[in-house]
Length: 308
Image 1 (tube, rainbow, N blue to C red):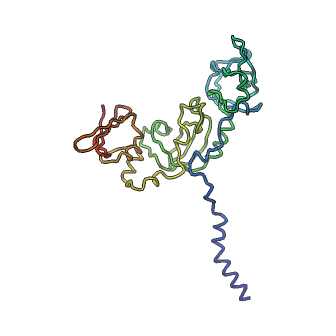
Image 2 (cartoon, rainbow, N blue to C red; image 1 turned 135 degrees about the vertical axis):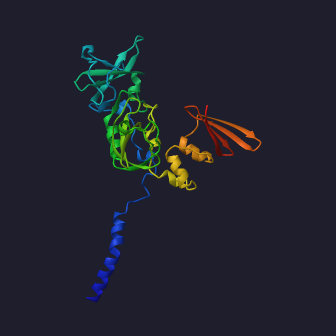
């Protein structure tokens, strides 16, 4: 009995550590960046699409990029944004020179057939590296996959400029919003032609959203990719030498004299132009920003803040 008592006591001592070992998440294979997290999610070429593949229409009108097979079926009054279209097949079109060009055939929600002309020869139908500039619609599967990976996860937001929208600002007026702080992703849905993903998030007691694209997406090269909006790790951990007082300024995109060039870059971003010169007392740099803002540095320290 004494032997069993010892075993029971030892089990009680070891049980918490055993349970924590079982529930501890592995750290070796966890993604360290958003790019790693989204690795493998990319726009497939039409040669890899399948009949009935759903797409989300991103514009209100069909426009000139899609041609109805039966012109009378075109409706200029129907709001198409957010509707589901379905890929049907690849078809050929003969141009005025007799060359066979590739067209992509889609079926609208009403069951009408439309064609998107790629301007590429039919040989492109077998090219797995070809991605058409079909900005008017986006594969629903990509939106769902990105949502399943990011929803309910916590990231650090890297911007607080006009790329980020806070609906409450329209009610109470503009307020200063911090960047480099944790946010929780609420959902990812369809966006716009230039930025096909709409990312909704919660930051403390604030709700916000922004529009983005997947990293490496040539189809929507004008938008900011998700990898530039979000960070898995705390950006402050990468700058241990910055004081909390200066970091709080950086979070609000504020600058003040004596900040280092790196601190200013974190706060305002990279300047559009830099002029360098030598002076009697050291090296002088002039940084130019949008809205005619200029900053003067002496030996890597912010000296003057001005407007042209």
